[in-house]
Length: 312
Figure 1 (tube, rainbow, N blue to C red):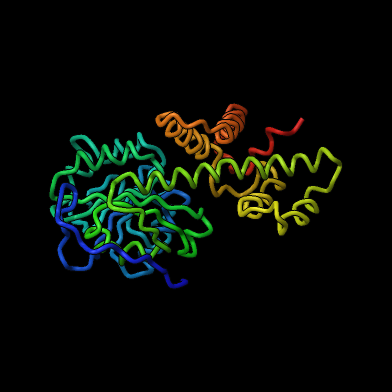
Figure 2: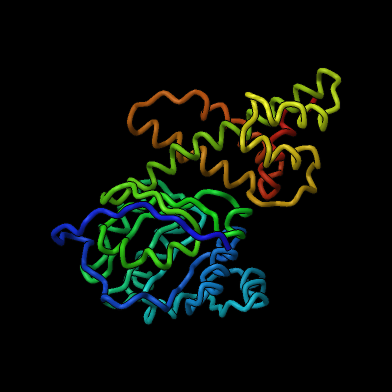
């Protein structure tokens, strides 16, 4: 696994709410919630790095996949009561609230001086709700990731980290198992805001790549040759290089990120933009394309299949 690089962390500041220091003992016991396409390889990276990992997922198939790769599993996060760090990689803000809040939620289960690390893309509002509900003895970090399945497998994800600097310093050895950290500051929600900028670009770039390859077909070009011709040029993008080949494979393309995920992410970005009164026409157009694909029954297909919305 490539050596992870981390940014310089700010010096410790006086303690305030959600900044209760963790013990000066390196965290070892990790509860990892969400064993989906990205979560499962992330749990595997922790296991390979020598941490004691318990994976949690309500889906029996995902638990079986994790168990086959040597990850101990459970259906509900009983292990959170003994964990040093609980990491949450769920799909939506609603799932985060469901797993973290309430009588049986993580914040009621977690022991003193532990940390909850939200790694999902859920928007600033949801992660702040969780942080505000946390008892003073449980620290919360906001660390959404980007890089997709391919980089989760290689340990080369990028992480947008915000939260108490002392907690971030303590959890850093765990996070470094996943890739590279970008320090977004001490305010919970800033990591989600950085990720929103990232997801605006991702949402738009996938649709732009789909439009370009569909345009090539309409011009009577061989789309595979067109893809090869433009990938390395000024019009190329990471999304074109990554999604382009799968766009040409059709509905049976390997699923690494679903149409449904980008319905959620583009809508989340649009909602954030609306909240601040920012006009975002490009992500609005991309959102409409993902919703059209969803309505066509392709919600669980690879997000590259948004290209099908262009076909006549």
